[in-house]
Length: 174
Image (cartoon, rainbow, N blue to C red):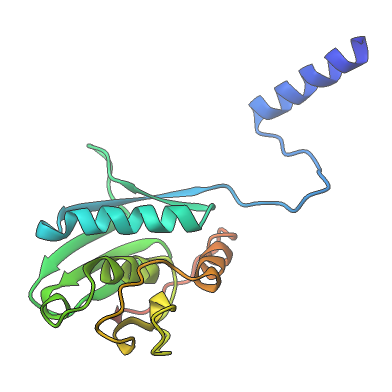
């Protein structure tokens, strides 16, 4: 009984100090929170928030969260009359544009938003033409309404954020 109480107390102290104890399971990276500012996304704010929710439901080691007052965002989202595009400064950081040209052409707004977040999360365009591949972007049919990252895309983001080392990703266009 005393040993059990002592062991429980030691585990509690280790947890408070942030000590990671060896376990039989795999090691997981701490969740990284990325703050995004959608205040300039105009009529697309709701789609931006939904896209963040979709990514948050598919990955565990990174979280997309609206920026709280007084904090600098990692990601800024804008709306304009051009084509959707992303400019990353490093993994998890940059800005993207919700271009109305693609929306006017009939592309699904939520798919565009989720796709552009994918670039910030380190995914390149993957022009497979398949609607099941979120990162296939505009190579998928205009009628494609899939905005959910595939298992492979989610796994790639998990790998991207499993390490503290983050390489810059080049600017991309939807």
